[in-house]
Length: 364
Image 1 (cartoon, rainbow, N blue to C red):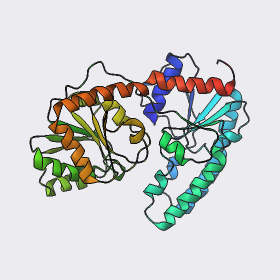
Image 2: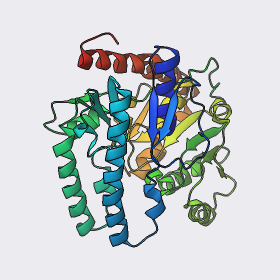
Image 3: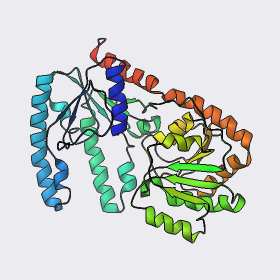
Image 4: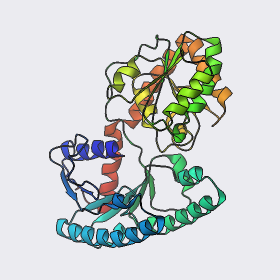
């Protein structure tokens, strides 16, 4: 989300000539990590919700209520001083009260996940009930915003009955000049080593692939708390020579160029940027049709393959088809690169600009 924010803010300032102010609550004097434009201003409200995350539940709940009142008061003062034309919440702790601040700006709320992600993550009946109540409360104040931006058409359908909802995907900020040759016997997957990304499902599918093509390698890049568990699974399946686990890298472009197929095994997503990035390098993709995102990105059989979510055999079969047919890989890779152009930063930011003009009724 931070990287997406950087790309959008930089484009608004450096390309479209907007003035942008980014308001944070947890900066604590630290330097900005991402490379934001020097023309963007930053103000931290010094709320520091995260200071309480390891405290007892009742303490966290009490502290949150107190800090939310402070947050609203400070944000109200800031916005009435700055008088922005548009104010956007990334659905964080300000989302439940930003629309109440009467500073004259149009309020936009954007959501970077899918509606049902909290239900998917819920581990028991009690937590599922709590999440349903939470989502119901969200619906009440989401409707108070001028626009509610979601990433996919699939997620839009999940938010039933909202008249202010609009779909604007995240954009691919960099379109490479060079494409993968698709000749190396190498399959790539990238992501946090966590339950959401489902890498243990990919490893199980790779066991099937390896039985047919032991000379191909699966390379997984990422960090996370599942690393030891995944190593154990790889060893138990005797795939040590076929699967490589690498830490996250800043030179991911080089890894795309050295790969012939990209695979995503996630249980759920918002809009998977890794799929779009891989496609921009001309790589055919294989993914579970998880909620949400892959169905908006992949045209099955044209630029990649969509597989029933959780069906290990289908995922393995799709990989095997692309490994066996070099010409199909190249054909799909070309289609994938063309598809990724629909998600270019320019195309996506034009959608934001059009929405800004529409809600302000002026060319700002």
